[in-house]
Length: 441
Image 1 (tube, rainbow, N blue to C red):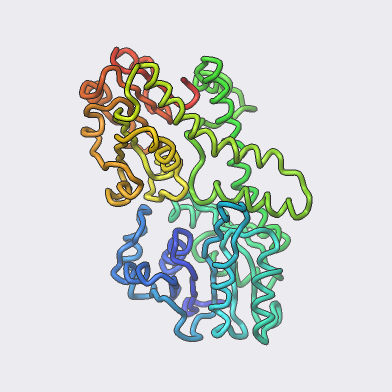
Image 2: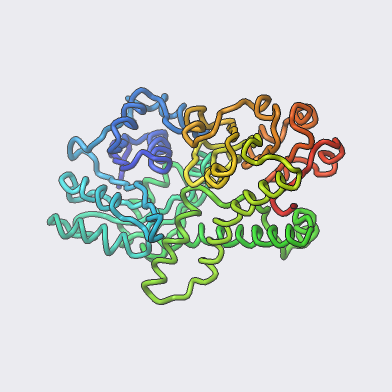
């Protein structure tokens, strides 16, 4: 059995790895956080998080340099748990998953892995990678045999950015292990901070759980987004339709539409499933279509902006467009702009408009400016604006004095409230605003 003297190595200090490492250190274990980026390690050694996650910096400050150490490599054989949390990106051209980070992380532990150690994969991977890729590397390049000399399993991460530290402790941990002994070793670690654990029959069941989780959400969001686009074409308000359909009707839980589905997970994991099914000649028409809808809706928004400006007789190139919300989501709040649909919108508008301004409550000014827009405060963004677009649902976006701010804008102001944070009738009553949303032209 494990004790608090066990040392756990977490490989990959990204969002998944760092939040797990801090949670495990808070539970009382000695933890080594490893990342190949010297800049990342230097930042963490200074007890500074290089991305925003509520409560995370406090944990790094509390445990960093004590039972939570950071390094660019594994220094010795003192660790007896290795948890791989590196990324599995999808190639943007082929839409197929890349396993080079997994391969490199696996190779990095080989000189230090010894009898009695435990290896846990937490990265999101195609089904079969744990057993047929990671295990084969370990067994092929060492004298160790899984199940005899070391323990092995897969525990998918299930946390949402902005609420990760809470969810690490309260969302059930799905455990797929090589055998019962491995499952017990893994459960002992995760049981130190989470009393909700679900054992599935084997590693492959755990791998597919993660992929199905995110694919389900992507498909569901795509349904709402397509209905929103249909309602726009029909001249209807999808929000009114959705509210009526869902109201006190238990069989319906139609989600809100959005200006696209972003982030590192939902934009990637369906393609991992599609790639697996392609190899098995399994039809994935629904999943493909959903991903296409969620990638296309932001361009529908871009066209609407240009069409609205044209209808008002505005010079599109010199029109001022102020975009609020660069992180891929607003609630729970995050600074993560990876695969943000805001960036897609900006890239779509750049050839047509020279006056793009941006703001985010969490994302830094330098990062916003790196996308080729002019950073602005909310007040200055509304000043002289032809279009204002609220792209994510950050709580601060719902508390604006729209009437007062719009008084500083061009008349009429095209106000696109993508998340329906404001009442349409109230905004329209101001007289100098054209109100629009996703699902309302």
